[in-house]
Amino acid sequence: MPSRIDRRDVLLIGLLFAGTVLYWVSLPHSLQPADESVHLYEAKRVLDGEVLYRDVFNFIPPGWFYLMASLFWLFGTSIDTARGAMAVIHGLTTVLIYLTCRRVGIRRGFAWPAALAYVVICQSAWPIVSQHWVSTLLCTALLFACAGRRENRPRWAFWAGVILGLLIGVQQQRGVFMGAGVVVWLLADALLRVRYRSAPPARSLLKEGVRLAAGVGLVLVPLLGIAAARAGVGAVWNALVIFPLFNYRSEMHCPWGDVNFLTGWYARFTFPLVLKYLPVVLLATAVRLVLLGLRRRAPARAQALLLLLVFSAASALSIAYFPDFIKISFITSVFLVAAAENLECIAGAIPVPAQARQVIGWLAAAAVLIGSGRHLYANRLLLRQAYPVSHATAFGRIDYGSEDEARLRDTLDGLLAHEPTRGLYGYPIMADLYLTVPADNPTPYGFFLAFGYHSPEQVQQVIDILAARRLPYIVALPALLKPEDPVFRYILQDYEPLSPTPLAGRIIYRRKSGG
Image (cartoon, rainbow, N blue to C red; front, side, top):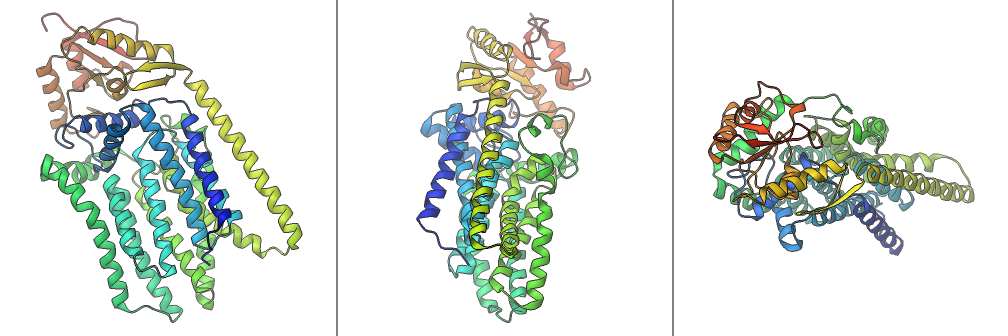
């Protein structure tokens, strides 16, 4: 412990990465109207020169938008670029889970199933392009870096700090909790080593803390500094601190592992109960850590168990604001490593002859591969059935759920072709139209709810912008709106339906003559 990497590991890493990437790009290139298209469109706006937190409002840090804007600049603004990037991110996460398992001493026969389980259980829970998966990659990389501390790598703390800075730069709530987790782990590890009579000098621990902070600062200071210099310190503070702590937090609550009517459709692609109860494996981890500590046995193993426990706790706290089964899937990589470590311990304790153990191992591997393959194939088939209409758009070829969705896009494209600008507003959440038509959202908000966590001042700002711009067309989802909604009330007052028949539940409203 730790396990050395050889050619067999390299082969498995290649298979895991290639298999994950090829599988993900083979899924339908759908474009969800909410989170996926909102953040991709905002990245496009940044690429087009608009200023984040001033012209474009969001309450997550700029890392995701700068990343996607850069990729759009390099490879083109299309769904293919977005999907390809997400495939690579999933592939790298799979590889890092495997490498983390090996670094904490788990044999390859238990390491690769843990990595494969990420593809089967985790990514299947949210098969869209999302900044959450970048955070998952960075959290896994952080765990891998911290596991390298036991190998006496002097620069581990600096690189862990760089990863932590990137994580905070993508999602501040996960980054802050994981940063606190690293500090707690360092202190807890020092206490554990006191128990083993091998405590490091305080100066050594202080140096690690300084290197960790230096790595964070190296990434975070320029990243947030650029955003603040362009939009203003107040705008960045309001977007990244005030809005998440007060507006967003006041509206978002659910029990651990929740499956609700909005996310229930995604539950069919994964195992919500497995995600909900997988953290139970940490009970065995905790018991084994206590027993090893009391007996002062296997210090390296005890340190690995402590790392997994602290990281698991920090990961759970990082999604405590809304811990539904999808959010749990974003943090499950550490639970998978812990599960693999416990399974290996249990397998090693069973008195089975070496030859029989080998046969059982091969049979178990075959069962895992066959079961995983069947599940992933079924998911791919379900997704293709859910998005059967492939249609050319300004954002590349998109797979739609119905002909009406494609017809809506074509209708809007034809209408805007006769207008002097491509201005269009989709209310409350239809950022996919801005990408596929294409069209320009005149407001700073891609995701907007007049009743919910947006403030009255923001609601009035949207109404004022719409009144000033006098857009020829607005698209709305009447089924989700109430007459007392001030934005919808403005739409009904100044606009009339182009047709009483909705297209995919959406109605195109045309500005009234003389309005």
